[in-house]
Length: 138
Length: 161
Image (cartoon, rainbow over all chains, first blue to last red; front, side, top):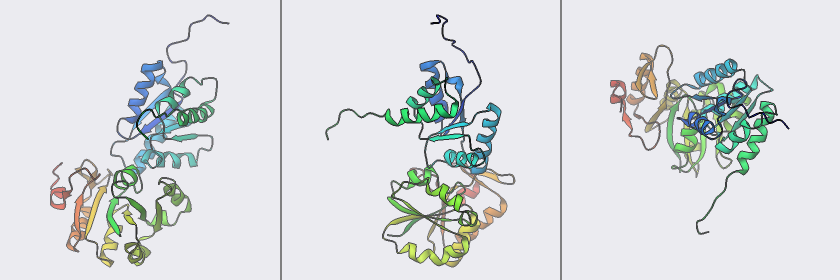
């Protein structure tokens, strides 16, 4: 086994876009950074007051700039998700995960052995099963 | 019940509509009036997938929407009618009585001036809104239910509320 310490900084470029309402993306990425130091794997995108066409163009440009093929969004009905689905129409190898949460992104950043699309699918399952409810009378 | 909200929103179906308005108004269906979407199965599927399974979405172009309006108004559920631009809403108002129109989101484009955080209008669009009002519709801008409705005169006065 290697005793080499884990690298703490970026070892490659970003692996995914995170986009959503308000400061959703920046907040989630900040949380990932605080917990793991791996927030650099994400490009947060905010879409305040943009038209549908401008949202699509912005996300597409961020994907091209960062050379990523994975998008996490907040809400299935949200503008970012709609825009991302249009982008994916011409990008069959890309993956969109709508309904992103923190456990999902944490799983993603530690799945460096998988391709980003594979990691995204795995992370989606982790995010889906990570919700727990405690307390409260039935 | 009936159509409880006639909304102009260039994002069409999105979070503010489905969740922001949809939940408090207990919306059972959305009538999406847009020529481009009405002619594209792919676009329609895109918007269908954006709403919860208990909510129906119906698609019309501007021309046949007016004819279908009466049936939607008789629907026992509550519904929202959405257009992506003022012109489409104006065509509806010209052919059927619409008491109030909600300007929910018209975003930046070259030639438009910002009127509110979420409303940008060209001079022609301003005229179209005044025309809507002259046909008897009360026009207000309001992005989400918790926001104060901004009357048309204030909207066109450019006062940020």
